[in-house]
Image 1 (spheres, rainbow, N blue to C red):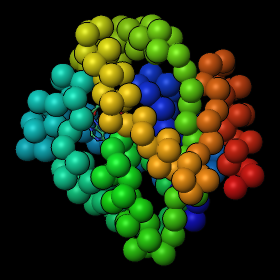
Image 2 (tube, rainbow, N blue to C red):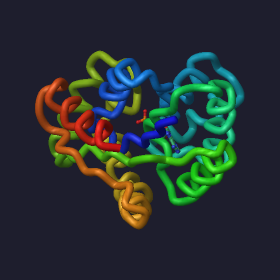
Image 3 (cartoon, rainbow, N blue to C red):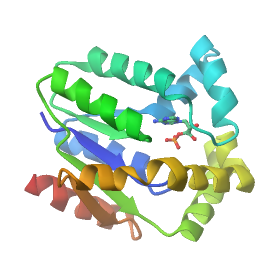
Image 4 (cartoon, rainbow, N blue to C red):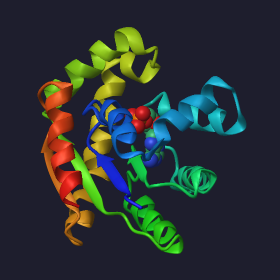
Length: 190
Ligand code: AMP
């Protein structure tokens, strides 16, 4: 199995790249943001709970997020590996992911981080908001809060994965194809 965490702030291009990479490497793409949006759209109990956080650009509590992610991993096994997109976002989530993969006798092989400047992120998200239908992309205050939450709670995961030599930074500015190529160079060396 090959398990990759695709990392980076909101608007870095994780979803776009994950959907290309999953086909190229025959991996299962798991996006916690997509899972929450699916539940919100279908008005499930989980969706109602999640929406009270996603609307404000806050993180959904770890316990809820981890339980949902674990169930999705189980649902897709056996498979060739996973691309985790938008998970983990806290140290507790990273630790729980380590236990989960260990339980399955595998590991996280790399965290690949898309590096993009903040002002480019805000611009990209406002642009995406015009067509994505995502309420959290439509409001600049919510966008800036999501970026702040990233720096306050999520960015620390860079050092978490650096400790085990699994962190790979990739320039996230350029054409979609150029960025895919940069990521593939990392994956092909794993
Ligand atoms: P995303 O599509 O990854 O930008 O996620 C959209 C929103 O879903 C985030 O702003 C959070 O409110 C929530 N969310 C997604 N993934 C997580 C996670 N791993 N932990 C907590 N909240 C999450």
